Length: 122
Image (cartoon, rainbow, N blue to C red; front, side, top):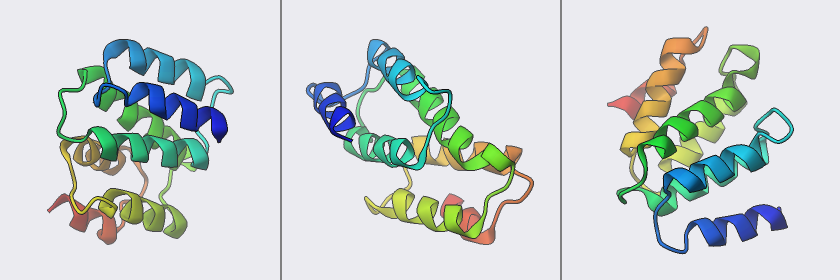
């Protein structure tokens, strides 16, 4: 976790995420081939911090890919994942463009898409 905290500080120094920082995130977070729950929470924190900023388009693509990989490891969205997504997406009181892209991707790829998540898209 300390490593992620240090990474977060350096990434947020200028208040946005650029293409090189996305590559750095990809290298660090996918080092073991998977995005775990701690790393997913970290990405939501980053997204909340840079929401509405002039981020590189690669940020949204990476965020959607990484969180989807975490949630859809088994192809389904279970109750625990619905709870986590609802809490993380609602943490800053808004569903931003990046989070909407995530929800739409999950809706398209998951075997199921719970009503609680569908309501976040409205």
